[in-house]
Length: 300
Image 1: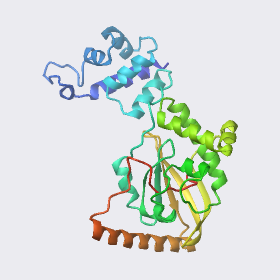
Image 2: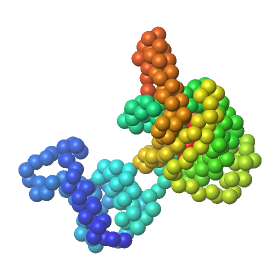
Image 3: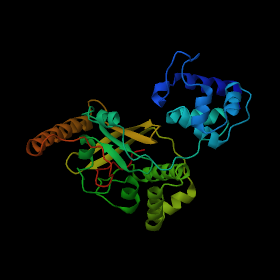
Image 4: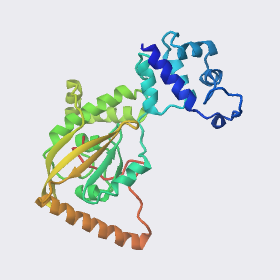
C-alpha cells in the first residue's frame, strides 16, 4: 500500500471541503482550509487517532468498511472512491445495482448528432436513451423490447437482419458476465439472466464459454426495410461512472449509406415536427422505464 500517496490524497480531498456545506461554522480559527481531521473522522465513523495516522502515512491498511466511510465523509465521486480503494490495495466493492438512468447532458448530446445514430445502454443491456436516427435505423420499433439481450437471444422485438448478429451474441454475454460479477445484488439483472438461461440454449452455451470482449470499433451491414442494405460503423464510448456505453452508428463519408442516413434523418425530423405540431414539443428519448424503446442489435 503506497501510504504516502494515500495520505496526500486524503489531505487534498479533506482540504477541498467547505465547512458550511456540512453545517459547520467557517470561522477564522481554522488554521487550514477544509474540514478538521476530527470532523472527517466523526463523519466517517472512525477514531480520530486512526484517521490522523492515515494522513501521516503511519496507519495500517484500512478495511473496506473504513474506506467506504471515508469516501462518504469526503464526498468522493465514484471515480475518486475507486481510486481511494486502489490506493489502499483493496478492490472497490461492487455497486448495489446497475445505473438505469442516463445523465441529462449525455441524453442531450444524442440529439445534437443528426447524421449519427446514437444509443446508450446500461450494464444489463437495457436502452436508456437513443436518438431519432437510431430509431429510424431500427424501423422505429417503439413498441418492441428495449433490452438488447432479450432481442438477440429470445427474439423479442422487431429488428432488421444484421451481419453482426452472431458476433453480438458473444459481446452481449461477455458484458453480462462482467455485470453479474459487478452487481451480484441487482435483482433485475439476476431475473434477466435467469430468463436468458431458461429461454436460450445458445445463451447457455456462450455463458459456459466465458467470452471476453473489450468495447471498440465494429463494422457491419444492416438490411433496412426501406433504405435497403446499409454499411454501418459502430463505435463505443464509455460512461464509466454509470457503467454505461454510448454506441455511435455512422456511415463512411460520401457513401450510399451516408446518403440513406441523410434521407432517414430528414424524414425523421419532418415526422417529429409534424408530431410536435399535434402533441406539443417532442421530448428527448431518455427513459427511466427502459421497456418500449427502440433498440440496436449488435452494439457493443
